[in-house]
Image 1 (cartoon, rainbow, N blue to C red):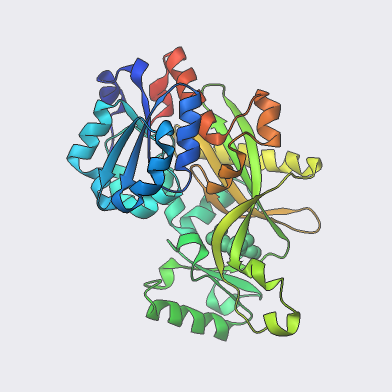
Image 2 (tube, rainbow, N blue to C red):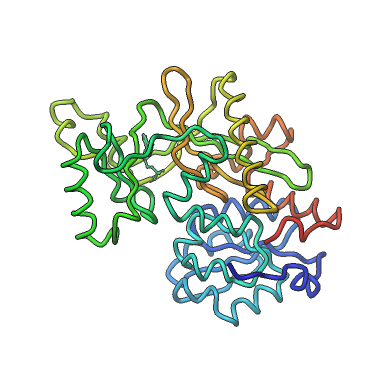
Length: 355
Ligand code: AMP
């Protein structure tokens, strides 16, 4: 990955006039809202067809950068404009999806978060290896010839679970993969992950690792509301049994966990932080999410991570039951990002939280 010299870029920055910059999607409103509360300036990169919507939140936006297409985000004049505004880019789930991984990695604007984690996150196989090596329990992985049903078949880069399918034997898996190749969802077997389908309930944990305070915070948890799998429960079994579930995320539902589960969840969080520090120094910075199934014996199996803010945090613009315990004030993940940046500036270690 290209090396970006953060210290050199920061030499031209006015630290009293820092801006938070993000793309108009995913968790942008929360990020802007949090930055304003913490007294930072905001820059929103808006695609023209969305301007009418984001203009309704003008009070949260100090400066708009308009683009016709997302790939323009990395054009030299946009980069220049962002740096002139002393901008720190906040990557979110739509950032890599819209801008593209190669471009996102090379973008010469300081990013709050661990840039090198983006590439790990983009590959199903590397991502699962990262979790496994961290010592976190993950679903079993199978080859076509040794699978134990039920399995879930996933494709690298599939957006929001699109195209994933559940299968009960080798023939179903083969047929599904051939169809996916036909639809252009996947190119070859290297991008296919055949994984144990874990029976239990889904739970997603929103973590924040603070390099400034050297502590891990659990800022919230959520459940994803997915079409059509969550709708199938509303139908009588005789009808739903014939319909293939799909996993397109449409929103998020708040979740408070049984307190005794929090010990394992925090342990997983710390394992993730420590492994990232060892494998990808300086390690994870700020928000990340572990995505799990909790089984009926309370075992927690993590099938995915996000190395940046997740959209489930949008539930907690006013803070979550957990963020209140740390901060005793309304602390969203967006606000927490801005707070971390402010604290790093005060301590003179801003370059330590940017990559
Ligand atoms: P993802 O796109 O990875 O977040 O997954 C989409 C959906 O598949 C979510 O509803 C998950 O709950 C479900 N899912 C993913 N992997 C597994 C697994 N190994 N076992 C059970 N459910 C899974």
